[in-house]
Length: 67
Image (cartoon, rainbow, N blue to C red; front, side, top):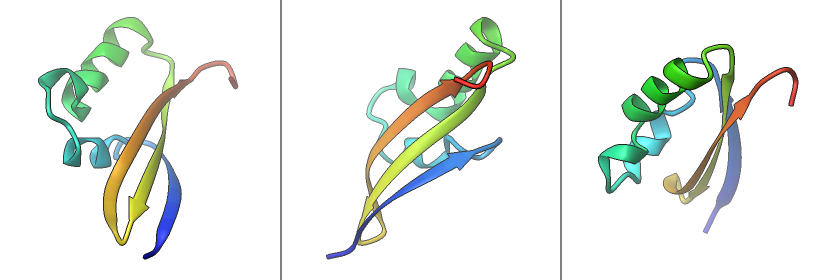
């Protein structure tokens, strides 16, 4: 079993989130719309945990003013 944690930024950072989503409010489309409305200057920084290439957890964070 291989486990790893990846950090992603940029426009495709949320892509792995859609593999786990079971609700429309935790999808890349919805979160990007929320960010555009409430934190347009912030950038995504997303941690994705994989086990044997399968996404098992995703933690989306917003980076704003270096924090």
